Length: 328
Image 1 (cartoon, rainbow, N blue to C red):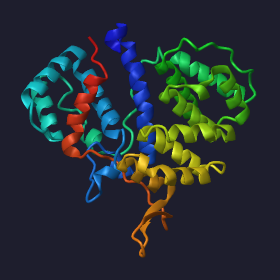
Image 2 (image 1 turned 135 degrees about the vertical axis):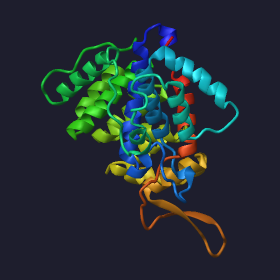
Image 3 (image 1 turned 90 degrees about the horizontal axis):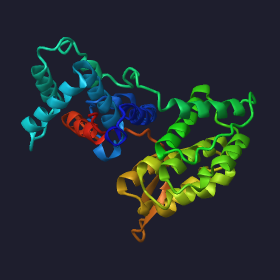
Image 4 (image 1 turned 180 degrees about the vertical axis):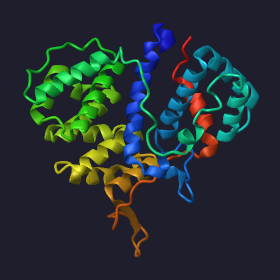
């Protein structure tokens, strides 16, 4: 994005969206699995998928880049890939290679690797440039003010906004509602729906976020749209949060369980297993005919998340940084 637009601010704008995803997963997961080097023990790695290794790892690399400088970090990355091509790299090997490469740079040896790699939870909030996100966040503030009866509904045409801008706007509303511990009212959601038609969006990123806002608000008219969405595609980043939101609501709990039990074979086995855990459902074999049936599970276990182990953590996030787009 930075290369396409020729503006470094797009790097931070994109990173802000990733930070929101990280916050969501850290809130969901058991604390010990929010480390970059988690202790999975005997847990099934298939139960552990999350954005933590990608987004927390990205922010680690972003911090390292700021420490040594963008150009120098770019040269380091070339040397890193050349040195470790065709092999698996551990976190410790990455650290040692980085420290050796930048041994003459002030601050490198004092970098707090232990906190980044072994401390659970969110890292320190990055100081992102919010120039491009400020307009989106400002519109979100205007809608919250409307919801709190402090002003009229904002009149703003966003039809020419990019998907990134619209998702930033919706993420800001979700975040601010969480901060104030109160969802939007149904009446406010209806005003947004009439203004932007996001309930009709063909873009999954936009539709997902608007559905989350609407479910949390208790808008019963969104339920058929949600059910259609979660049974027409199987991406866990969309279906799992929406199933959880429906299950948590009075209006959607029964529909969430019924829909999942009818469509569980549609999803990837990992996604099906995770959603089943969220909805407290399981499977049982009929002793007479051997058929597999869906049944309510006697207990609902907390999800244990994080697919990646220490060996893969740094290797995976190094690649993600290049996907996110290098500046220059």
